[in-house]
Image (cartoon, rainbow, N blue to C red; front, side, top):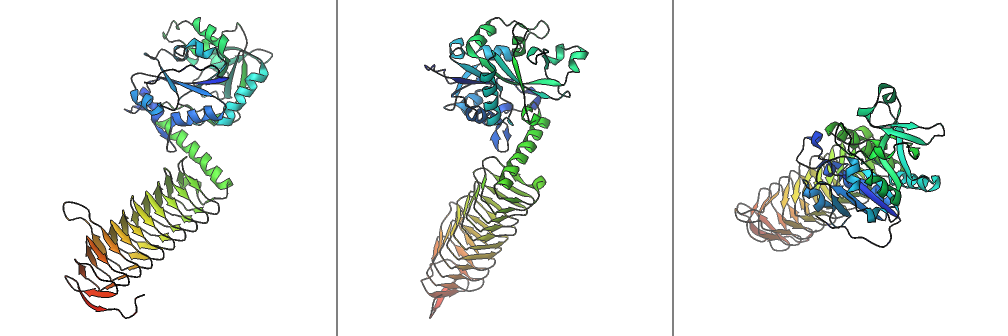
Length: 454
């Protein structure tokens, strides 16, 4: 677990409260590490804090979840809360000396929809308002969250936990969302005075707003940002909301999304303008799509780079470099380590793994290329395969430029087909084919040299 390193000046410190055990998730994975649109939710919160102006971030975490500390190592400081005794106790675990050095932003670690501009707006309102504390609220009486009671002048008089609220207080529509900005020095002193709730034994952060000094409240423009994730149902809601937000951003940047309801794009994906995403397209991981491409329908790409003007239909690509102007599918699978050059045609029911295909080559139908290096302007006939596994290890196949591989050819690796060479239909190639030669038969033998290799 990382140690706190105090520095001389931090105008804005962000504290992420992430020590909850997340029992309602029914998961061995800590709640804040569950992905939303392909990113662990605490990463999204961390980026919102930094994007909103926080120069330093501290995450309060549970020692029962060492994987959270490992995930955050080198990215922010961490501070343990030994037992889950409430949000006030969690914030009190941050050293007072660190809190006193400036303003303190406090945010829940299970709020993945929070935007950086919303954080920046809250901090700005806090600075302009001149109060010791500012909290964010939404109007949503259906939530079982703390109710915000205002004074006649609009300032916050009290914040009442839902479980402690009388019926008339529960009827208040304005609720607390767990996003605050404090004067750090006054916050540290107030935390020292917090006492456990007599009923639950927890220390509530909302008890800071006890009416002795009013605070400022800022109502969020988008209530969706206030969604906290406590169970799998709310996780799915957050996923759908963030996915829709990402698709809106893509469409406004010049990408056509034919049916947003059936298109899934993770937060780490980049798509160029004038590209069309057809229905049931799934883009994951570090995928980058160029301009003027057409992806889908029914295609899934993960950690794949696609050049401009490419087309991929009804296919699955994972860890692939796919060249500009090339096309793939339908019903093909390109696995990690595959590199497709420019202007390549990969047809239907093809599978490629750890293979490269040069510019202008064609792998049209029902073919398998494993550990193969295919040159430029090569035609791989329907049903051709590279038998790359000999029972002990994987072996390479090299097909040089301008070669023609006949239908149903079997290339038993390791083997090389020379430049401009040809194999006959059904050939079983067990030995190298010299450049310009034609090989036929089982096993294949070279019978003649082609007069004018393509």
